[in-house]
Length: 89
Image (tube, rainbow, N blue to C red):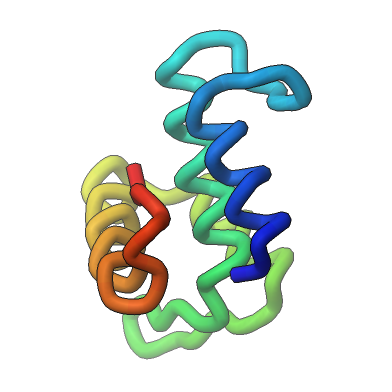
């Protein structure tokens, strides 16, 4: 992730101006979505890969609570390994 993306992510997570979030929960959800947008390149569900960015984002938005929890955990693990300065939601 670029430095600018990291700044944008931190601002989104904090719910600062420029973010569409109106509550802390909204900010947290938007921050997770932003990380997903920037880091996910492929998601295989029931053997069917999703690789197009727009389709990935649409699938993430339609994900069940359990799927979202799985994605957040994967984002946390990825950030801990590759971007230790980024606090994933």
